[in-house]
Length: 119
Image (cartoon, rainbow, N blue to C red; front, side, top):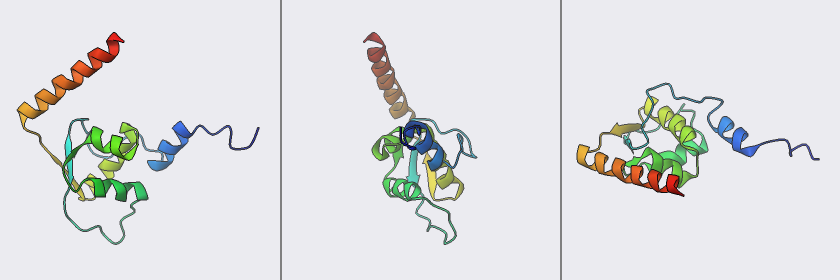
């Protein structure tokens, strides 16, 4: 057994990406919350990881939290923590979706969940 075989990448990678945090400092982001880049310049002393910068590039157009996580191949919890960092720095902002669009998306997700449960 090599020294690296005991490392479970599914646990270590998210832990490392979030620096051990499981929650952001702000309020919990809903999966359907729409997040976009604020357009503010990145401060020179900002401690942004590669994943923060990739995420910020993804936010050029408003995207839902679940979409950001999926497109970057990150667990949703990790994406929420990293998005929270960007929100705290003022580099991203949460945009409220119209109620009709939000309710139709919610009903679609419920149908998908019901379908998966039926399997």
